[in-house]
Image (cartoon, rainbow, N blue to C red):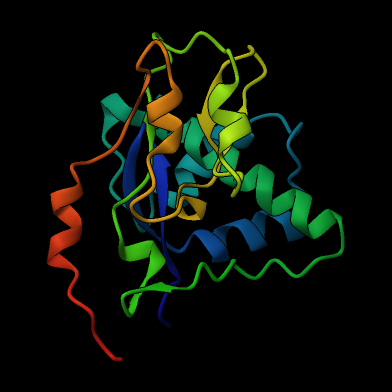
Length: 172
């Protein structure tokens, strides 16, 4: 059986993961909810069966997996299909393959919210502590960096635009 594949943000780095959809569905069907004791540990254990999770990065992976599972649970609880979102294509490539998204340095973010007001796609979201985080990296418009331009403390960075040069138009 082929496992699902998707990329998630782990500590600001896009990381390819296999079998998340299957893992999330099984946990949900077994009654695991966000307040279930031991859920982060169980997520790491199950996802670690098909993915390498470095020992030193377990906390970062745990945070990322809990964020993704939280989205999954909200979607299932609302009655919506838990099917992954289709982000479309850019120059003929699936959006998930384009490494263009903001990274936010939480130590520099002052929570002013200017970036939230300028981001029309809702790729950014406020955090419980009043700062901002990347909520959905693939909603970010490829080539846009408006949020970084308005960020006074320079907490938001993007990869160099030159990385987009390697994505030649295909399938047109």
